[in-house]
Length: 281
Image (cartoon, rainbow, N blue to C red):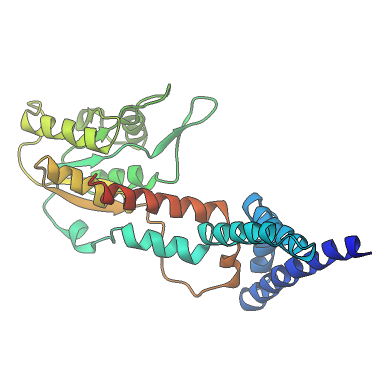
């Protein structure tokens, strides 16, 4: 009988908080929010989280305290890594906010640099904007609004894929940016891209605009690091952040306690920027 009761107890311990999160989410935000919370519970990271708690209770009720503690530690670690509030806080520490005055300036930029990494290649070879695709969109908007005299696309692929500088060029041309206005530089990472950019502006082609400021378009979480690399190479770039992961502040909801892969990825992106800052990159 005890062998049957242990899983039942563990199921109760897991089911009560999970059910409470779903119910409270529905009460505060309606049925769609409740369904979303319930779905997150059954996603891989959510299932792993609840499984750790389930196994911790079973182990503890069976007298295996050390095993129970190990599973409980895993439960807490996963809960932190995939927590929505923690992910938002972490990303907010690295993202650069948008400055409306920068885009409102009347003088056009000499050039806008579109850092690579915003275009993916589908299985059929089609180029598609990814989660950082706003980089391409913002750059195209600046061109069509007469805010820049030229564009530089950047990046060299480290895999067997088209170079980001080429995919960026093709995407811009597909929305009406003329080929003659687009230049390309290589670089396998941000540091190398800034090296190549320094070389380019020090000895530009004759067709490249001669006057004006140079702006940098990249994701908000990435732009502080990109600007640091630019300054290391003596470049004075105007930051134009986009693809913000942290949007308008919203009230806390219990569903954010359920770990998700999306929240874990956001924390990983922020952690990468922290690490780069710590090692001086």
